[in-house]
Image (cartoon, rainbow, N blue to C red; front, side, top):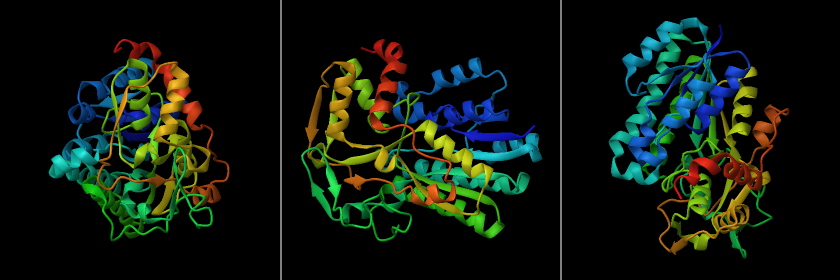
Length: 356
């Protein structure tokens, strides 16, 4: 049976991938050792999601392994061999702040872990499609030097600029401040490209904006929409960092991202790079997200503001989806921010209410 290996399988994107690819009849193998709990504490643990996957999908096979352990990865690849037709690599250390505290661990997870997955694929499943969840942070703070205008509730790019529809893949990744997290993801991003070009492997690099959805175990340091909604629902104090709360992010629902992965897997390319996010269809500023969360929950968010923005953080980032839409015209965004927040509220009402 055709097998898909999914790293970070109990996380937001990984679990969505598990459910979808199991639903179309693939044998799903998940790799996840709940490092998110180690990074961000008990509230960010994905253990609850892993248990749910194993309960709801009897055919799902879970391995509690670390992607930095090549011997453990190799054993799994040997066990499934040529049945492996797809790899979706979502496991990562995702926080700027965490990377600065422990650069060795950050790089070993993001770069060395990706190298382990690529090399195991090359040795044991070279014809498989390898999909990598990269990040828009590979562009560093270059987006902050675009011609931006301050509006009432958000920053916005000059409408005459060629990036008004969103930032395209031709933006340089050089000569900018990436954060150490961004640097480790650049290393992984380029590795996935190089394995595609050098060895002729089918590899797709998806440089995500804010990836979100109801299964997100959001924390202060990662997963802003989920954490914002959780704080609004539970009365937990929230801090807005810099830019007067008008910083803009595009947000893509995990469902829409997995559909993009599926379309790529059906007609894969070699070393292809895509900017992927909510685009112009699904984006918001921090102030706008707070207002929507308060309207949905009927509660006021207890938040404070600090002028100290996170180093290298984007003021405005919206992804240009044109390249992916041109290559895969049957795909489109189906969730906007209000729908994402409403689903997040309804899905987690009972679970998060227990924290109130």
